[in-house]
Amino acid sequence: MTTSAWQQLVTQALLGTARQPLQLPLMPDAPRLSEQFQAFDTAQPERALLDAAALLHHYRLAGQPPFGLLAEEALPTPPEAESQPLTPPSLSALLPRAIVLPQAGHAVDELLQAVSARGERLPPQLIPALFDLCRSHAQLWPLAARVSGTLGPWLARINPEWAGLLPRAENGVPESWPGGTPTQLRAMAEIWRGHDPAAARELIARFFAGERAPQRTALVEALRVGLSRDDQQLLEQAATDRSGTVVTAAVPLLLRLGGNQTSASIEQALVALTSYEQKDGTAKPCLRFELPQQFDPAWKRFGMVEKGGGGLGARTWWLKQLLCFVSPAFWRNRFNLTSQELLDVVDKGIRVVVIKAWREAAVLFEDREHALAELKRQESRGVADIRNLVSRYHHFLHGPDIESLILQQLDTQSNELPKDLLDSFSNFGATFPDGFSETISQKLIERLSALPRDVELIYRWSGAMDVVAPRIHPRHLTAFLNLLDTLEQSPIGPRLQDARSHAHFRLDLHKELTHDPDPA
Image (cartoon, rainbow, N blue to C red; front, top):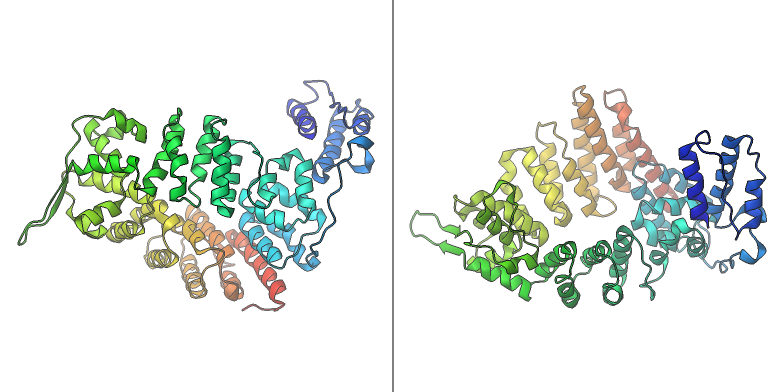
């Protein structure tokens, strides 16, 4: 009811009451609410439209209309009695501050983690705003469900805006199929997989064939979470799907598992095209790849494309695609070489294509050794090359790998912003390590204090501080804010307000959690 009625009001507002006569929605299952709508003064259509929207908005937030306007027989069953204690008002009062921060997802996540760890729940009046935030930050939903008591799942069942998120609030993998858009299904399936990979796989397998191609693709992509050999049968089914997008999603996961017909077929095709000459004396070893003579129709099953190549000749394009599907570890093991040595011995005639293909393969197989070897080779080629590679590799590099790359780049004189490096901070988890927090705070402030008065540079580097502020170790928050204060009169000073707001929020949060007036 509410989704349809709300959409009618939105459509009316977009068209304008001057272009189309006002017609407020009729709602048979809520006659008294409908009567209230009809009682509005339609001689003032703009006011009547806004009054109706305000009334329905509160209905949607509360899960039922105010003032008992719903028909008695349509009243929902009240939620069960709460057993969780309420979190203290001083802690719950931080949620409205967190929701309006630029990095609200990160701030709310930290707050909800704290409330959940205490076994407490948020007060009812904060749940609607939290659930609305979860619509755009789906990763927060399991936490939001844990801190919303019995009211949370009840509201999610009543309000259609939140109903699609309900399976994420329930404990474990649901027995019934929730359906949903591809984005919703992937988000839900990833949460199920994180909770119980086997039960999630069984549920997906039961309903997989009945879904449309975009949904099937999303479900296959969700199998990345907790991927194991037990997923092979479902992936092999997906690899023969009638939809090319489903096949394209399934094949890389089969290849990551290895030891199956798909990976063996591609490896055999490449071995037949490979020769490795280990020369004596001063002559350098050479790894050569011949170009395929023809396109094997069976390759289409792996998602390979016969035509297209981005400027490459057809045979070179086929070789590059094959190489993308085999882990660099396969070549290391076959020739007993490190990734650094592999990069050194590739034949010059095909070198550029092979190295680019290995980059794609390193991403597919999350090959950390190859990624670090590539980054080391790029050190002398400038910031742009490192940023390009880190944008590919950062999600599977380890914290110390990223620490050294970031600090190394901050030590250069380039004003290029290491944005891709900064984005990789997610690999640290909730906060930076203690020592790294102190070091990066000082180095960033040094760089910012010397920044020229350039609008674009100021915008980029202030964005860097927005990324750093949510992750500074609590021990260093006071010192971090003191360092920000030293830049108040500098050209970048006015752009650091968001970073200050987030740091102040976190400082107050940790003071509340530790009852320490100064976590430093």
